[in-house]
Amino acid sequence: MSILTKRATVYLDPVLHKALRLQSVETSRSVSELINDAVRDELAEDAGDLAAFEERKNEPTVEFEDFVKGLKRDGTI
Image (cartoon, rainbow, N blue to C red; front, side, top):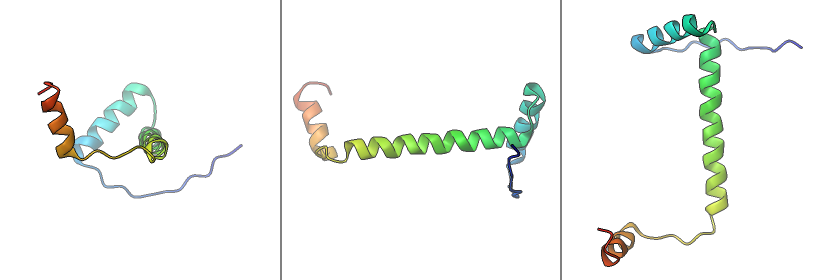
């Protein structure tokens, strides 16, 4: 099975580009592979965050000020 790819122009900070090239040589993987994996990881993390928000949407909210007052009252701070 052949995977179709899309070409994109991405402008990288020169230091990041150098780091990617070095990592590419060290790992015998292309810069494109490294970038694709990084994007997949970031999107997976976002999906996990969204799932956590969904799970907790019915929890009561606590105002920051009240939370800090509770920490002080409990002797935590």
